[in-house]
Image 1 (cartoon, rainbow, N blue to C red):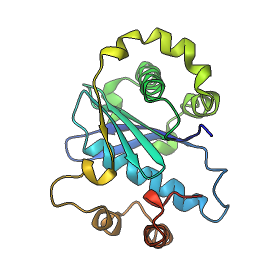
Image 2: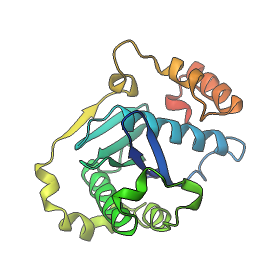
Image 3: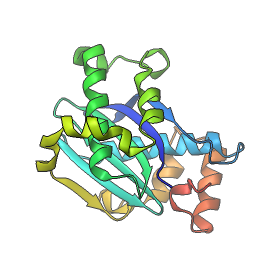
Length: 200
């Protein structure tokens, strides 16, 4: 079944990426896993943004999930986490549209000082819900014909995006954005061979 799980808008600063707004669709996970799943999706979104060059697009496979990322030339970035069946082109078109709308509401000089808790951008939730069916995005896709010429780098694992010598397990254990429960959830899921610890 085609599925979108998360849409995150971030600002990629010189040293780190900061989430500006996130929307999640985690109803397919057990109630007790949802917080950990959200935290881990935020962690993955931040990590993949920090390791994507400015003005570049990537789609990264991680088990049964795809993490699509686009970092604009101005440092505004978007990450969409979907299943494998959701079309890459539609994912990147959706990210482009969301970032354009966000930038028209919040100009670049504000990004470094924005706090996710105070950012009012309901469109993230609206798009995540509306475009669960990629056919809904047909009109949106037609508006973005130029995306065909855009090179999207495809990686087979999240590990492939990490810098040489970096290990996902180490990043998880050092992360301040993940609670103790989420770290334990990740380790358990890793042992049972579930990808990215997001398995429902």
